[in-house]
Image (cartoon, rainbow, N blue to C red):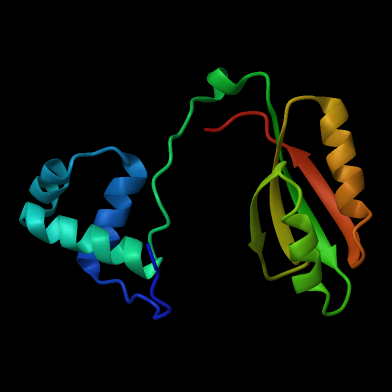
Length: 147
């Protein structure tokens, strides 16, 4: 599917649809239409448009914390030197253990979510990130549970 380069402007129906999909990405179109008070065709058309424009990237499964008890998850806050943010992001994208990355304002320039199977892997990933040219400082917190 080719994605449109035009940025999608969300209206109230789009925001409601996305909110419902975040709660249940497997909800049938008919159920979404019922909740939204619109026809199935309207929901399907909006879904298609959101996917085609790239505004909606896909659907995901959420797993309870106790099903992933053998995994270690952490948040790493990263300070980047000067104007090297794009270069640092490119290099960090090559690390499969970094499952999410965000640019931020404030003291930290980037926040990365790390998911690994062991403390040894965790230590290795921290070292790899800290060795990337342009990474000036970092602080990492292990996630204990989701509430």
